[in-house]
Image (cartoon, rainbow, N blue to C red; front, side, top):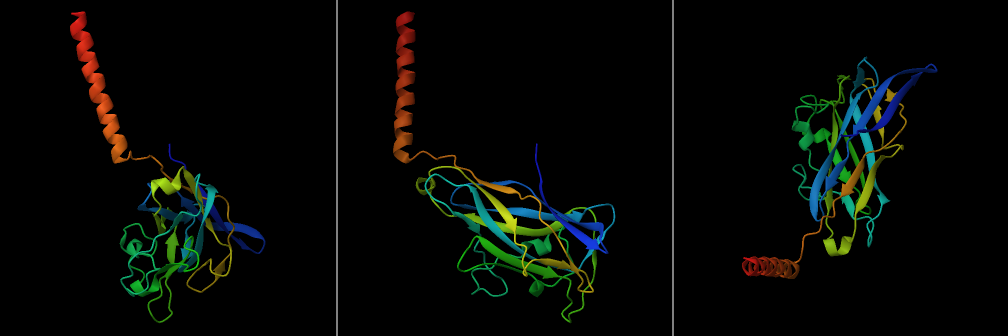
Length: 233
């Protein structure tokens, strides 16, 4: 059974709780020395649509259950940047072309940003909007879950360095770099609730020498069984 961990964004107006955003981050598993991603979905907290024109977010990967021999091994991926190939800290903008993306056909490639920090690859800032290039925005109604962001991850340590399992949370920063606005640039306040876990799978692959010993052992066992069967006949 799949559990979705939610970050709840609420809008307050005149002291009354109104419709806001719920962001769902599903759990994911990544194997050592490989790449992966986690999708972040956004939906209205009730049956009424919430208008969104710009999203700015800042995420951090936090170790909750460290591997046995190292920490901080999971980070945001260093992807190729089609706009600026020299910017090696930027994430891919693949979500802009996905059918369930919140700003599909309402944004331009230059509006998107997803950049991990140079000094700390466990922190990523991103943004996208419906800006048409003239600082004019269009509201997108959000009711059912739609894709807000695809956070690309990488794990580049070898099994010998990991030495054990690792579990991580992806947390949203509540600072000036995180916020949601409508077409009138009205800020939408938000609060955080819970966060989705990322697990680094540590299923070990036997070394060649270990595989050879294992094969010899299986062959020896088979031969012993054949001899025992003949002697008992």
